[in-house]
Length: 442
Image (cartoon, rainbow, N blue to C red):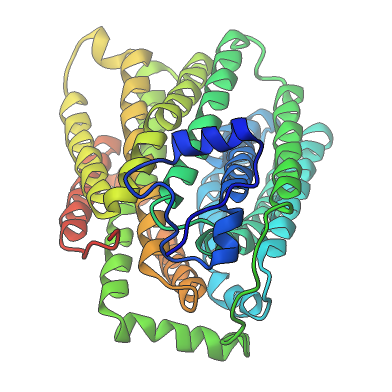
């Protein structure tokens, strides 16, 4: 084991010791000596780049911003239903094949940088669509650009976790992701306040174009910052033919019981992501769907990340397994509570504030799931198998997310509240599965 020798100015080095300190504060457990010396610098660069990318994500949110934009442009309603599946599955499904190409490169940060630029270009293209097209043409153009965005995101996702594992030591990774999510959350909070203040004028497509241009610039900034990360060359074995390597990697589900258990747990806990649009739909049904409600939802999103992410991040560095348990229980209980509240009469049960509060809690739970499962996966893996672990788990979950679209059918048949109750039960099963996982933070 080694200690990070800071190459930062003294104030920055002191800040690193303050926010990344614990009983093993200056010990690098699983990265080489050279990487350990660069860790304080890489720590802040990773936080800044991830913060910029997360701000871009929120400004171009598929489930909020793009959905409202499609409606403003007069696109057919059924196209809006494809936004979240294209956004999520489009970034996850190709990763199993992308990973083998990334594996051939000893330095992998450039894949993250290239993916970030691709996402920025796609979002800027959406801004052009907002200003030049309308109706069905605008809807299809937005979906096509969202698919390009998702593919670029998939490349960045595989590379980011691999670079994180090479540059940041165990017991610091959750902290990095937590602070990035928190900083982005506070910016999102400000955006939500702005939307609320402009509630009477947010039907202007120019407003959405401004948001999308800002999102694109954030992605360019994220790529520029990440390019400055000091990454040591890594192993390049396993970078053969994409199809054969993909099939070989899928064999991990059979040969690696801990990884298989993790993927099952993650699949159950994807219910937190699937539930979020249904909370929005229920709020629209119960409150009349004003744009003021959209602003409150965005504020709730910002608060969820800003308040909970640093806590989830630090807790994940101690036990990401227990973070998954706790967030699964919170999401499950909330789904059942919301189902119960749906039958309550009274103005308070239909207030915008109540649904913003529900969205805040599910956002906190989802933040815990995201940080917990990312930290667990990175710490469970080694430098030799991390890229394969990320690619296999993301590809399988991406396929299941497409199947998760069937919950929309359930909502049509049984109602939105019943769907949230079902997803809540799924979250509770995920919590039980997480409880049975092995500890990897040791």
